Amino acid sequence: MQSKFMTYPAHARAVATLGLPLVGGHLAQFSIGITDTIMLGWYGVDALAAVTLASSYFFALFLLGAGFAFAVMPMVAGFAAEEDEVSIRRATRMGLWLSIAFAVAVMPLMIWSEAVLLLLWQDPSVAADAQSYLRIAGFGMFPFLIAMVLKSYLAALEKTQVVFWITVISMFFNAFANYLLIFGNWGLPELGLRGAAIASVSTQAISMVGMIVYALIVLPEHKLFARFWKPDWEMFNRVFRLGVPIGLTGLSETGLFAATALMMGTLGKIPLAAHGIALQCAGLTFMLHLGISNAATIRAGNAYARGDREHLERGARVVFAMSLVAALLAIVGFLLWPEPLILAFLEEAEPARDEIVAIGVVLLALAALFQLVDGAQIIALGLLRGAQDATVPMWAAAVSYWVIGAPSAYVFGILLGYGGAGVWMGLVLGLACAAGSLSWRFWRVIVAKVGA
Image (tube, rainbow, N blue to C red; front, top):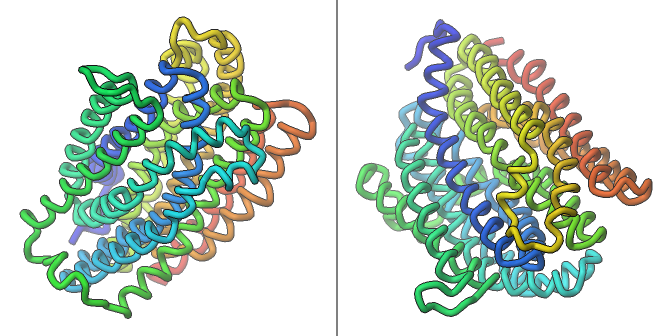
């Protein structure tokens, strides 16, 4: 049991030890999407626009289902603090059950995604290309969600190094598979978008197998897959009740970004391609905040289970400070070097290169604006999840993103004619509202009742 009188430097070291492998793992995972974007950008703007739309669609659904994996993390951290190995197994196993069931439920939305995208006013050719990608990539939902549950389980037990290394191996495999299948190198057929989709599914499968093998070998006492078919309805309901609001919170945020992609799609292929590049850059820096947030969930879950208010407060101050430093570094990069960042995604011979860069520079300037609030909202969410507080944050996020953020993006970008810059202004406003409301919830409600 950790002392409640840990100093701030001691908290920072503990968060860094736990969080840096998680940050590295998230960066490696995100680089899989960046690799797809860069290589398909080299392949052509049409392919880049399609994968931007398809990825937004896929991840909106993925994050809804990932709520069950994120629920496993604070539950396992709390059970570990209580040394309750049976409950660790029960929570993880039911998280896997729920994730598999979710993947089955959303497969029709992958297979017939073109119809959905057309209902959302997307360009018919882009919607058709996106469907050809999703009809293959959609099967990756199964291994992706299973791997996410196991990552949460291992991270909550502070086995973060293995999460990092398995994800790094997957990253290199994905890059190599893309090189072979998108462009048809080494005598293989040139498959373009479909090649990127095959590479992604294969990559997620490798990650899943790696997590399963490690869990079986290193933690055999948990017997995760013994009598896996046996239901545990009491724990199933507990994971479900925590996972649904977490998933809906993730869907609110990712849905906001997906909605902005749809709005950009109505402006044309070039603004959509610029949006995709800017989102990849902003998403890369977001992985720093997400890794710190995961560490915050684990440590807050441990402190909350013990009723250790001092540990909870000090740890929270440390993770907010670390997120602030990461945000400031990102702001400097986006404002000083926007063009090199954007050009990395484009072929020199691309006819629309100058137009994409011009739009992308403006979007990256706005991405710099929301670094502070984007980091603050995900850190606050991580701390709230550690306390297994999910329902009120779900509503706060829904209001911030869908009552304020999305309508503002539509008004500024479409109705008032500010284009991509206006759409991103709405993003900034929604994220700022979420950061404020979620931070208030943690400090004024959760901290106040611990040890009271």
